[in-house]
Length: 165
Image (cartoon, rainbow, N blue to C red):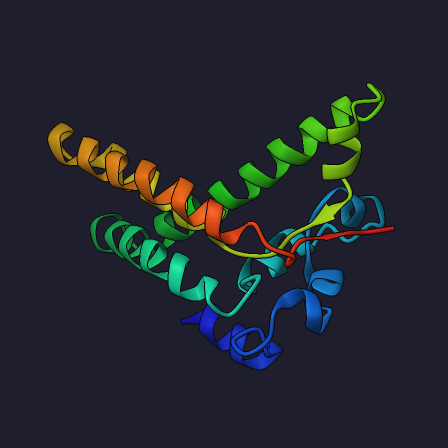
């Protein structure tokens, strides 16, 4: 619900985050962190990169977050989903930071990208759900997630992430 409200308030439900400037303002990444905008790791997760991304990621977030909240409570659900998001962002940006002086072109290019969205939180909650289920159901959830993730990733590689000059 918070994500949809944030999307409505910011206009992300109707316009891509890049064209509206939301990626520049609210997006996380190495550039934002170097500029001292550490808060973007939280605020950026409330904005989807493009309006149709709400359709792709909200079902995963609703299923994963809903299951976690029902079985473990709202506080634990928030800890898992926000924690998964923060961990994913910090691991990726930390890797880029460690490799920044290697001269690898892909590191230089990718470390300049800012991003927004809650897919890290959604897939983190889905992973936690699969770990908390009986083994047979956990494997099924992981299988569905492993099929869904590459498909969503291939669709979502779009101009919504932006190289900062």
